[in-house]
Length: 189
Image (cartoon, rainbow, N blue to C red; front, side, top):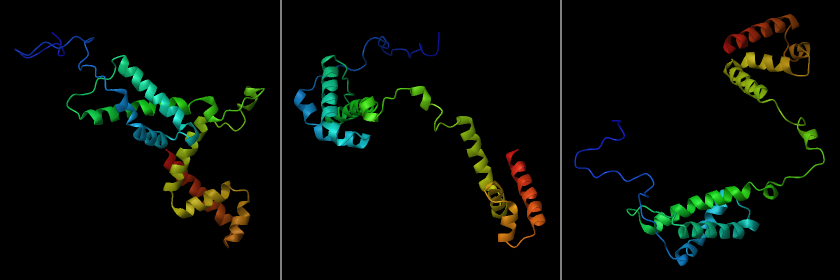
């Protein structure tokens, strides 16, 4: 016997999986309509634009009423009925808002003649982004003088200009840059 199928002596048998654990409840339509303010507040929290809130609110009410009519509203009898209804409506509102926000006209998609022409434009390599983030994390852990030298070396000006601006000998600056690069390489390993 498997661990799941064991039951204590005298305990009632578990209900079949197809049998609902709680009975279906059918609240009147007026109770759904009474929760419109709550639904509207949830739509605002989900980011539904003001111009679309009435339409999405209507979709929420229709979806909830359809589920009630189909017997899919099965609240826990131990919970306050209004609280259970509000929680259930919260889930429906969240899903309806998500569906609404994913529509193309909401995302402001613009059709183009050659969609593949824009694929390489502005896109970044994900692996490169991850490597860059890791390098920045390592760079932040270095002492400030090493960071400053490494960032100056990566900048547009030559290191001799950096050395002059800081009153340093270019050879000294090059030596310090080698030390900073070694410290960076040691941290990466």
